[in-house]
Length: 210
Figure: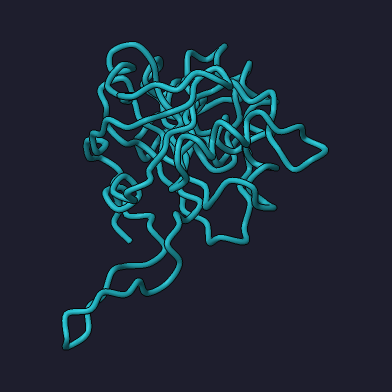
């Protein structure tokens, strides 16, 4: 698993469903460079069990991200048609109707591969026959991409482990606080709390106060 923090986010153009119903042919994260931070997250598959809880939870907190000028974008290896159908399906029937942020189709699995969250790999036997080892879906990867297109945070969960959307918001707050104030954010820091200067004196002062 690669550590992409500190590197440019891999570029792509792909089909995506936006606003819950509109299919775009060439969606790209490049549209946000210079304008917004991006929470770009992968999930294994449409019409599964843990995944809708995460996607709906992101929608429930979408206003919190938007207030911070952050775009939320989801991605899985499903087709844009599968995304569209899932978005039209009521929650009581296992759907995610009401989700408005973009869902990217990584049908060729190249985006997940470039972000190194694909839960398997293509292998070949001595006869040159191909087979897929592992799961042909994405792990639950989440990446915070800054306005310069740089990855500043990543976390990758195994397939059964749902993520904390509140933690994603906390990480956004920490990055924005650092960029605005130049102070670093200690363990368990939350918006509104004091941070500290990145010096020995700053650390000592912070620890003494706590």
